[in-house]
Length: 336
Image (cartoon, rainbow, N blue to C red; front, side, top):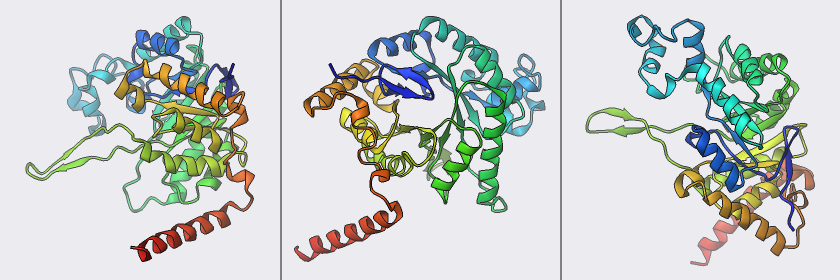
């Protein structure tokens, strides 16, 4: 029988398929369903920095009626029903999840900086979370802010949080860093036990009739997988941290590609939102079936087979592949 057991952040998982932070992990019944469908672990929906700030300011009951006295950046939060559950409800959700599930439960903090992060990291640990994912969602829009300042902000936050808890901490990143490999190494040096590649900055649309910006939430597609595969393959076995691939996994073949690139786990959300939680059973069965059909005994047998650590000079290979793509395109054009 094919062995899907894997390790992530020092935790033993029955499968490398992990459900990422999303609406799928809001409700306890959904979490139970995900476990029954084969999830190796679940990442709970995020506790947002704005919730922490409201709690730190003492507005947990007050702000609902006096939003005009809140800082402008927090006023919209007070009127959003999904945020009003507050930090206390989030900690209770962790406790209930741990009491009901046998698979690892990973907490999630979303934001970019808050003095309350370290305290809530400790509370998340105390509530029973097996690990913590830092979803650092920050889009620097001011020209005065340099790339080095942004990176240092991440490093400081990771160092502060990892120093405050005993549970392993992973960091969910966007792909928009100029020297990703170096930055990844620095994050690990600051205490990160794992990296989650990559976050998706949601892209708003424009309403040209009403001259308005329209928030949009589009599910991922398999076409988004290639960027993740490249960086997982580049970083695997080159940094001392576990790697999670998230974004663009919709089939068992997508998962196989991620594992061959060197990912320790494959995180999934859009495929389950689009197809239902039971689709996880299909993905798990298809992954085991692919391994068996190709004479692999376990996921460990394929992990990193296509990582750049197997090749040598990754920068030179990237350049050679780039030139090869251009040459192939030119040859195809000449044959038309």
